[in-house]
Image (tube, rainbow, N blue to C red; front, top):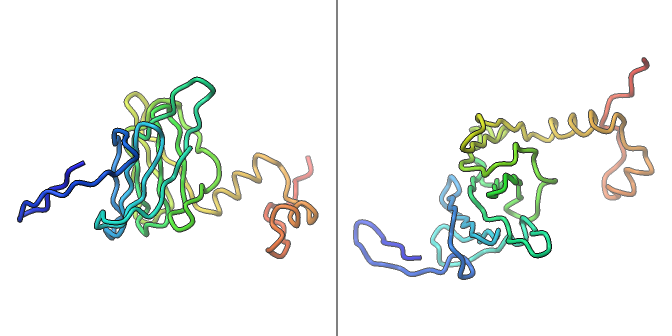
Length: 182
């Protein structure tokens, strides 16, 4: 990919992905980082000057045996730059921690069609997604909302034994309200 620095005009050549067509680009709000998503489902992370690649998020959308991988169609950084939203052309939507380059939970539920655009609310509490034939989707993504959703789906809190198995480094405390009697 060629970049032209304005207004001086020198052309700079950078290979932003591993030889695959770039489908989506996003700069962090402070301009210190850039993400480039390609046809194979990889996202390359760069410093804002595009001189140093800082990481690659690969295998974001694993393909079934014999299938082609899901391409990255849209990217968005949260206002503080700590989270990257990544959307695929089959409707997959994920959140990634930009510091650790690890996913933040599983895929967000979507209608399943290609996501064309992503945007965070100014307070990073909500992610918005659009597609060709689906109304604007709103995803509350605060930790408290995630806890509420997990509690609603499981109907119970983690026991002390489960807590120590899954979260051994944190002191135990129940995160869900006690089940209600019927």
